[in-house]
Amino acid sequence: MICIHCRKAELEAKIACVDGEVHEESYTVACEALVCPRCGYTTIGAGQMQEFMRLIADAYRLGHGLLTSTEIRTMRSALGWSQMELAARTGAEIASIKRWELGKIQDEAMDKLLRLFLDPSHAKQHAKAMGLAQRRLVRSELKSKERVS
Ligand SMILES: [Zn+2]
View 1 (cartoon, rainbow, N blue to C red):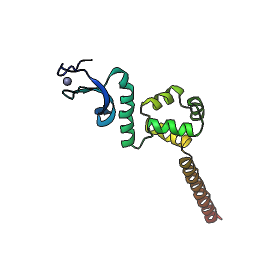
View 2: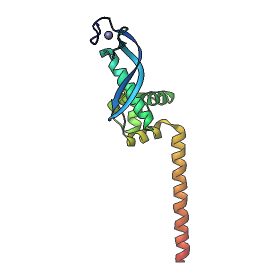
View 3: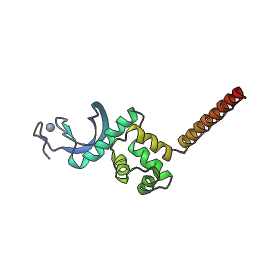
């Protein structure tokens, strides 16, 4: 493909830093792009768009403390679960799980749900916090009974 900027060279596929926008925030990611060796014009080819969108979405997720597509896939694989199994366990749509792993950004509530099911140490912490909360409740009930009697 001829460079549309200088029209004097063929674009070459190579790794380049490319800017993108997610939810009105700008991010720069290193990804495969089409670059003009003459003027430096850089664009994302049709076949490179999905991976670029995934990388930009992951940059946003990192910036906002959300699990990245790679983390979701890696953590799920570490448990030996298919996308279907994760969908069945969480109650999320399998289409959503597929999209999150391809780059669509999950909302905060879904991120918390995914962490509960995918991150054993997070699940343990959560169970511990619930245990503490229950013990506090039992103690305060005992105290109020003592006051009554
Ligand atoms: Zn050019």
